[in-house]
Each structure stands twice: as C-alpha cells, then as structure tokens.
Amino acid sequence: MKNINLAIILALSFSLTIFTACQKDEEPPKPDPQEEVKQSDKAGDAEMDEAIEDVNDMINNNYGGGWNMKMSAYNLPCGVVSVDSSTTSNGFKVYKINYGNATPCGYKYKSGQVSYVLENGPGFNNAGAIFIVTFTNYKVEVQANGSIITLNGTIKVTNLDGGYIWQAVTNAQTIRHKIRGALDITFANGQVRQHKYYQVRTWSNASSGWAGLTLTIAADTTINSVNVSEIGRTLEGDYYYETQVTNNFVWGNCGTTWAGPYLLKSGLARLNVTIPFVSPAYIDVEAGYKWNYTTTATPTLVNDCQSNAYKITTVIITSNTTTYQLY
Image (spheres, rainbow, N blue to C red):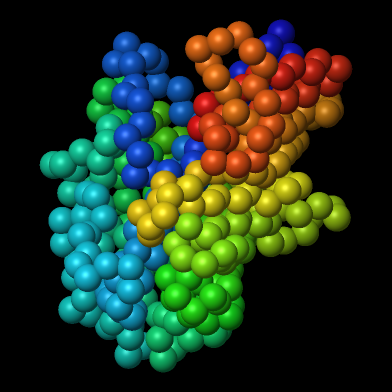
C-alpha cells in the first residue's frame, strides 16, 4: 500500500509543465470537462514561468526598457487589461500588470497582479541590474475542470552581463538572468506550499538571425554536491523535495523569425522526494524524444525540432517503470 501511495505522490508532484512554458503561444489541447482535478506541485511553477515571460516581453518592448527591434508595434500579453506605472519605489517606476479573467488565454483565465520594478539601475539592460517581480493574488483558472492556482511572493531577477534579450540576435550577445525567490502557491483545495527557485536563464544565438536564438535553463545552487534548481514541499503528503538538473534544458527557435515556434530540444532533471523509510524515491525526466503516438513504435531520442515528448523513469525502492509524455 505504501508503494502505491508513493507512486501517486510522485506522479502528482512532477507534471513537467515548468519545462513547457516557453511554448505558451501554441494552442494546447482542451481539458476534458469530466476529468477530476488533479493538480501537481509543478503547476504553480509553470504559471510563474509564464508570468516572468510576460514581464520579459514588456521590458524588451519599451515598458521600462529599450525598443525591441523585432517589431514596430507591441500587443500586451494575453489576459492583461491594464498597466499602471503611476507609482515609484526608491525613485524607480513600478509597472503593475493587471490581469482580467473576462478573456481566456487558450483554456486559462488569469486575474490578479504581477508587478516589476528596478532595484538598482540605471536601466534593466545594465550589467548587474536587479528587478523585482511581485505576485499579488495572481490567479490562473481552468474553468473546464476547476483547476485554480494562486501565486503570492517575489522573484528577484539579476541581469548578469547586461543587454536586452533581443540583443542576443542583433548584437550577438549572451544574455544571462539569475533567478532567486520564493512563492506561496495556493492550490484548488486551499493547501499552500512554498517553492524556492535557483536558476540561471541564458539567451544566446548559435547562428545568424532569429533562427539561432536559444534559451537554456540551468540549476544555480548546490545541495549535497548536486545542482538544484528548486526546493519545496509536495502537495500530496507535504514531503520535502529537490529538483536536480543533470543536463540543462534547452529551447531552440524552430522558425525563421522572432515568433518561433520555440521548442524544447533537450534536458534531464530528477525530482527527489524525501519520505521516511522509503528510499530511493525519484522521477527522472528527459526531454528531446520524438513520439509518433499514432503508432506503437517506441519514441526515439532526437534532440532537435522534431522533439515532442519526455521519457519519464519512476524509481520507487526496487520498482522501476518508464513511460512517455507529450510536451
């Protein structure tokens, strides 16, 4: 019975969505309205990722930053109903992104506020510049199945080398952002879990033009001699866990313009769960597999723009199982 319960805990604790946030512009499959709500710890992380990308989009498109050379006009991210920059903090403008849930973003409805402000300057593009992203009752709801995630807390982003993201292409720069912070994540059942983040996100250009733009997410702290990108407590069972990144997760532009699409090509992570008297207990997740799900053929590791699936290996004491999941 303990092994069965642990399998459920691990399955719910690792839903991979943190690694697919960069594909948010693609229309995802609609959830089954009859499906019971089964949330995972990583659901909140995915929504944090999307919100951080909204902030990056705005900074790189003249909301507190420089004009983005990718386009002459800029549409606000989906779900944003207003941006308020009327207040300041320590002499820097506070940009408050207000979301309204009247219009769906795919199958999601967003509300609440995400704000960002420079902590030091003079600009977001300066080496060493730090900006603070604050989540205030930022809620993401899937009305079809009742899934609700609410985020509160702060993330500190440090521009390590300077530059705007688009300059990875126009100026052949490497842009690195260090991510630190903690969020209190409220799940649909009212349970609250805190997650802490330790990441470096790197934008670079492997060739000329937008087609070479890549994003790499790496762990940025060491615990017990392993690279860790996140720590927290599981929703089911309230157990301590660590997300260890063995191979960095890499997205590539599989199109010819800024618009992409950006697809996850490679990466390997392990979620270790600490449960008394149960060892080992972990899930390995490897990106970069090509799965033709219309056939019975085993997915193959390709690590290119054909990649569309993860290989998931679950280890519980002596039990070892392998499955595949589409991005």
